[in-house]
Length: 610
Image 1 (cartoon, rainbow, N blue to C red):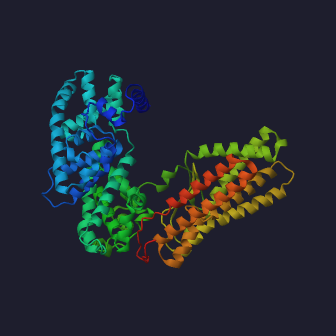
Image 2 (cartoon, rainbow, N blue to C red):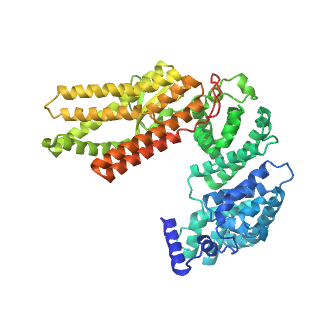
Image 3 (cartoon, rainbow, N blue to C red):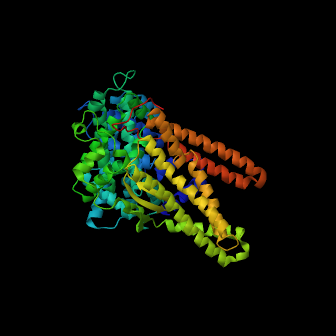
């Protein structure tokens, strides 16, 4: 709320007092940062300085000015989270005229860029140190800060990483807790809102840092000695994997310094393994390494590094994160070919389980409170399921009013409650079908979960056998079809009673659910069945994932366009627009599923890129 008000105030100031003045210049003036930064460039410096930091991380030892990589790492993170960072403006203003534009700076030789950045960083430190000493002396003595002191503190809050460690810690604490106390002027509050990125979500910081390290790997891959040739296993072992490990080590320190915990990056990387390596990793990196047959070796090497860092942590939660990781789907891939553990363990997950054991708590606890069991499988219910139940009851009440208006509102509500209970029962039955099929194929089933989005069977092992995967997936829609037939028979059997409309609606919903499930759109059951069929024919899980996702997105768009066209002619643009929006959402969901970590199990056969 405070930030929204500050931004509104800044907007009014720009409109009323300085029409045409770029917002970043107003921010620079309000935060007392010197003028002279080229128009429209602060945000562009994020990638430019990121490129410099990546280049320096792989430069020969002794050629990089002391502390520059660390400063650039902090600066890049500040810029990515707050593009109008005071720290960025302070650094760039010390560049000479021929390097003030990001494009011009990027064209300079690496050593010249490093020298300019190091000199600029020293100048910023020299300028900020006296200001910090004066303000922090008052803070340490417990003396109240004046408005000018508070404004200086706001400026320091966006450039704390230039200061000595002890001063930087105190500045971060002061700016984190005191800027919202209501003692600052409007200008300083706007400065705090625009220049202080301390309230970001930890997941955003982790994603930014992981993306930066993997983009650095992509750049290093393009700059290898023989770009025209393939990537050798030895080069990945000796150059690429160690470079990414060093980058992540620095990122872990930055994440910890932002107050997110010393092990936050390693936990995030392991527990968000598939999104990081499947979505965050640049496509060119995945495809280049995959075409050379070393993508899995690279992923395993980086993963092992993260696991080793987490294993060295004294925090109990770190060990528990390792134990949970070993049970996750994407950790059932082999070690790097050069890793000695490849001789004793079939997969990284097996090694994690052998070294650190199974999770000490029930992994299904993450899916809500226990609500009984079925066929020996616990049922878990998330609190958000109550919200879905309320919406479902309201929708079913309206449906019952349309199907059985003579029953009255109260009876329609009773019918809706019964219908909602049956919908949840059908969801459990659908997921039980998946679970029993998984158990038949030897896959561990953790729980049946009712969530705010519906339900799911928590199966910790991803079936990479296409026949097993197909039938495991098909079991759910098969149960739904049987439920639909049973509901239709029940509606016929109770014809003429108040319960018949309940089963009629169940039959309709069951039929719709069956059709939606078997559509070949990822991540629905139909999309997974299509992927399993492609794997059976090609033996390439990675390529099958991409083909199934592309087919699903196309089918969703085609069906949506056809349905919207038909509905538009009958009911008008509003219902047609709603159908088009649903089609777009389904297409997007399927297209998102095209990304796969590309990990390879011992029995898999690598194929060409898809």
